[in-house]
Length: 115
Length: 113
Image (cartoon, rainbow over all chains, first blue to last red):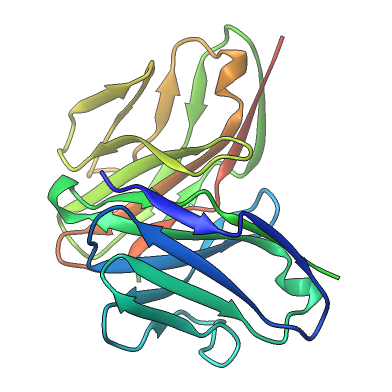
């Protein structure tokens, strides 16, 4: 299995500002994923991040709004640019274990509130 | 593309009654992997069950599910609900070699005394 840590675990920011969410894995993982979850709703895949390449974004999410970096096999950051109240949600990073039939592991989540 | 459909919204059960959360899926691939994830409040989603074998029951922590490819279903069941089962449950699908991992909309299970 893979343990994922996120920082911060929660944040409050003003509209128009940017914030970074960090995700660290306890072992090297090929892919990291970022999900957004609005209160008690489904997990929405935002993007897939592989080391050394541009993240691949899902429909409704853009690089300009949510730039993602993946500098090495244990680390990724998600930035929320020009934050708006509609961005208030929980952001999870995750990774998959291909040796275990693609079981997916999630970080603890970062709860963001934009005022 | 692939899709997963779950029992919608909130399911409220009295403790001791059986649990049945429906999950059906659509995929063009013949060897899907199906998962149930459980998401307790203020925790991370975590794996509850998984299967890729047709008609074989898989069990964990009192829950069970059987993948039926003929009906594209992977329903989650438990014989007797407990208060501690209250959580959000996601059914998910992936395929061998396919990078995509598709989650259903989630079903909130609330067990009451």
